[in-house]
Image (cartoon, rainbow, N blue to C red; front, side, top):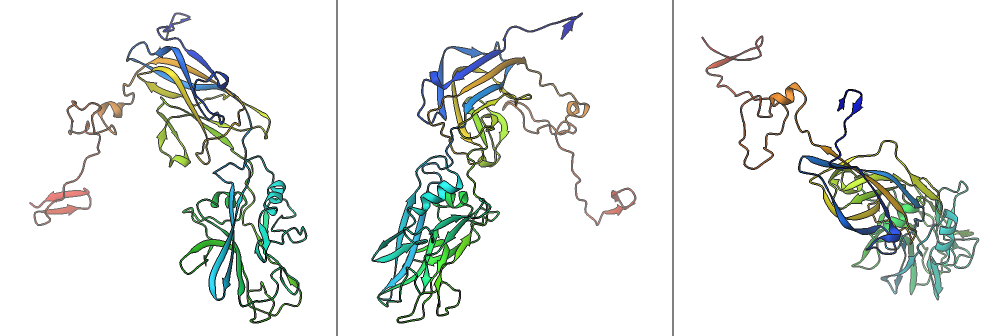
Length: 405
């Protein structure tokens, strides 16, 4: 609004710039992904005719996010199956990768230190302590992980068939705990419904089975050598087979952050939340490499409208917008700057059809409102009542039922 050449401003509620630094949060933990600041005085709209519009002015943080996170994607289970005097039995090596920032080479190097063991019998992947036959390797393009079986054949670690202990297979288990790291390594092929397509059900005992990827071992009977071929052929040399990851490794860490404010009710919809509305006020991209500072200053920030605005604290949570998991800043402080503006509300329908009632909600805004079921104010486009064909005929020209004369 303007009077002459001078713009008129309503100063009943002035815009507010809120700078939130985790250094001065009242409640938080070492992850700094759930922080509360309590205010000495509240911020309130002048009256019910004003609404608050909240947006992010800027956010400054360091990319300190690990790509291997405790209890998120840090577990693998190596399953070795065999029979003992004819009875099914198994061994599981539980690998827990320490949290941190890994590249594909350093992650594979760690897996090779813990994916096998030798205690009378051989269990695991690759060959224990032998870099020539590792359990895991990176392909020449440095993009995909390759998984290897133990060695079989004439001089393999599996040795000679012994009826009292017969090797039958070596696998990685795909369950709720291990699937995240298997996905990180690119070893699982995932269907549209989220289930793996390249796993096989493997019996560990007569009553216990797992979904797995890996290698089946065959033998030719007493005093034969083990083979890794699909159909048993007496081996003439050492054997080792590989399984190439179906996807590239995903070690980038969070690509963007979902910033939520407890009091907000926004129209932001995120896939990890099944595209439901929530309290997200911004999606902040992580533009810096690990260890570098990121500065987010949107040119056209998302604006969150909050009626009945009255706050005395700021409770901010930050998640990985791809997974919905809380991120871990690892103690690295961040600053979030919010702008709160106030506008007088105007809910009058602007279009001619809206004013006549078309396409407006049938249900009233208040429980004591009287419904108007009369067109055009009903919010519907009407209906056609089915006629009794014994009394009416259909006119193809008119397009409706017409009574007989």
